[in-house]
Length: 404
Ligand code: ARG
Image (cartoon, rainbow, N blue to C red):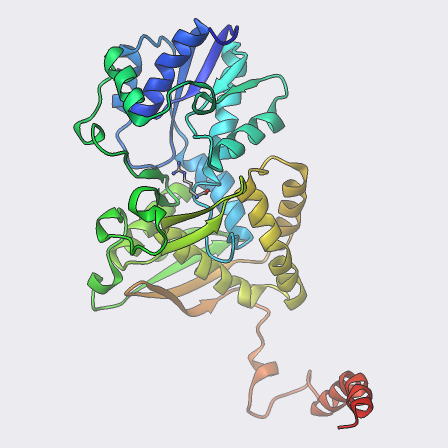
């Protein structure tokens, strides 16, 4: 025994690793373990998780469909910010963790558990995200991270433990360690094995939800996305719920090889890591959202959003979704979105999602102001002369001093 607990809620995927964790918790703490399996749209059948948990003696098994909550309350608010970590990563795994933590805490309170447990390893970002979220939601709940506690030192020892406890080990898991894959409605992320050498080109077989752009259809496809107050609400004129909409864009985008990213990133814990991401629907939505903002946001509002975006993205990457500063930035972002409504059409073609038109009932765009043709009232060319003369004043002083 490594400690005294009365009940533990485990984030349980039904896979080999969390099944081993489940057994290990039961043995080490000698208490009841409640399992929580979340459907975030990872595309796996979740009923096998129930059967496995039952087999391992779990009495309270929770399997919850969180797809709508995930997209509505986590993905869309993040999309309003156009969030990208290190300029490229759409944060697909990062944004899933606070939601899982939220439900772990809710179940722990409901069943009177004093701890929650998770299967994230000791080198990654996910342990930080889960645990910081739990800390921010309930200071009384403890977190158990078996990967950091147990004495298994190799994959072989883990597999031996599984066999000893009649935990089924899938055939393909007997040999080499598998890729570390994390999937939800926003993305699939693949890390480990051959990808650990950033000089190695990622083999085609690792991709799961996108075709190689080279093999994508030779005919482009257009798609129109409707926005209301910053959030996407329809595809090609058809209103959809958040999760349905993202599922549909994943399907369309995947066909055209949209949203692949091969990235070396800086983990919060300190090391660099290389991952391959597939975010077809998210990539389309980011381009579309920027498209609708381009005609509906004021310049200074838009630039302010862009200034805080890297900070906001880093907070999400580092696991501070439930921290007060993320909340404050979110309020700023949300405040900017009231008039971000209208439609954006994109052309999808061989890995690219390009905006080709945008319209909005709340547009700030003025053809009359910008036209090269003769136009009316609001603009006097002479004003530009004074504008440039005053902006150039200090530059002329500066240039004169240089003596050029
Ligand atoms: N590197 C990415 C991130 O930190 C993905 C992590 C994926 N998690 C996993 N269990 N493979 O957000």
